[in-house]
Amino acid sequence: MAGVIDRRIGAKIDGDFVVFLIGMRINKLWKIWQWLPVAMAMPRMLKELEGKPAAETGFLGQMGGFPWMVQYWRSFDHLEAYAKSRDGAHWPAWVAFNKRMKDSRGDVGIWHETYHVRAGEYEAIYSGMPLRGLAKASQSAAIAPDQETARQRIGSSA
Image (tube, rainbow, N blue to C red):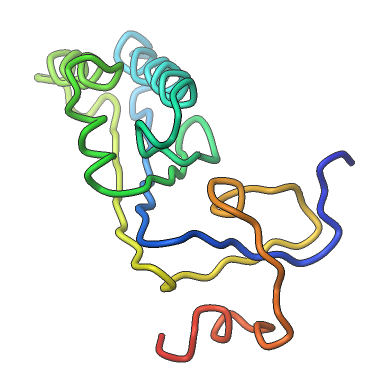
């Protein structure tokens, strides 16, 4: 099992960051012309984001896949800049989606949730598995003896 880390680790990231959850729901499976373009758009966006340095885009990484995923961003400003960029893959896909769905919003659903996480106000633990999630998008970190519980890892002020 290549890549499996045989101990408990946490995640460490300096400063604030953003967690972005995004997905779609196929409400009418037979209307493939409505939902297939949505399903095909995300891989193009990810390829675009992963092909550029994180320092440029603010995109730190993702996990999941069709029909939902979790993304990690350096800041909301980075996420918003990508979403609104007329030169990127997102904007034309968003415009096309809205035109296509104008009179048929019930055929396919999309959703997203955005969370601004303040520095130090998170906890993560991974045990016996490859790097994933925040530990992959940022840095993995050893679990200290005084960080055995979620409350200890997140801090007593939570």
